Length: 117
Length: 117
Image (cartoon, rainbow over all chains, first blue to last red; front, side, top):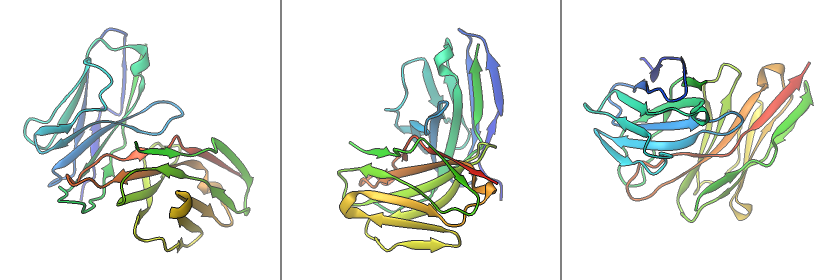
């Protein structure tokens, strides 16, 4: 079946502009995660959705970053007033819903490379 | 607080040499998972292994082997008889298992492995 897809694969924008990054999770996966990977670093958690609601947004760096998942499937990460420091690869992952401590593997998309000039 | 440390930033080996990538983690949870991911130049994260904190048995898969030692909070990864195709960035990651189930992955900064022919 289809994996996690992300669009666009590359996005170049100018400082101060608004951008939207899209993630299509694997069908049936209720959990969705956004991570950011800066150059030379490991992925860092941004936000996690369980269904339509953000269960944990503690990783969002500031209020310029926002994410939605209105129908519990596709998610959009929105960045306002972009800054050069926002340049990174934004990764999306999805998994089945967990209960208790049961593990469900996160499947990663290919990422969107954002460059802010 | 949870943390993953990969002290080796870059490693370079000659083809057919064995190489070990180190990973040390910190967590207060008694139940957690540890992972290794490979990120080739193409950028996608490729899952290699998951290990439950209750299972300290070492694992071998082809040329890959993993040494999990709870006493030293380490989860090291060894590639035997390295090949050029092994060249990539390797990430170690930790996932705590709170009662809520889904928790994000915490990644180390990665180790860039270069295998020279």
